[in-house]
Length: 77
Image (cartoon, rainbow, N blue to C red; front, side):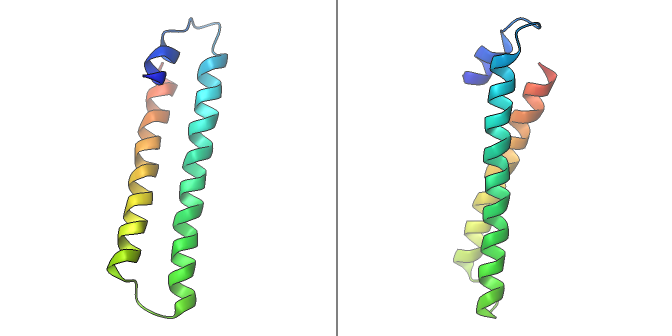
């Protein structure tokens, strides 16, 4: 809903869109940092990844992918 509202802003006043893009991009980067942390945790244990580990990684990657889609949509606007 926030994206639809931001897309309705005129071309000259893109401050709202830029702020939204910045926030989503930061959330995306945080998600990737979390994925890296999860892999480091697995590696530091010296074990193979458990099903819980893989589920947590998959969840983070799905969230990152969702945010990628939002960013693509906002850049088209």
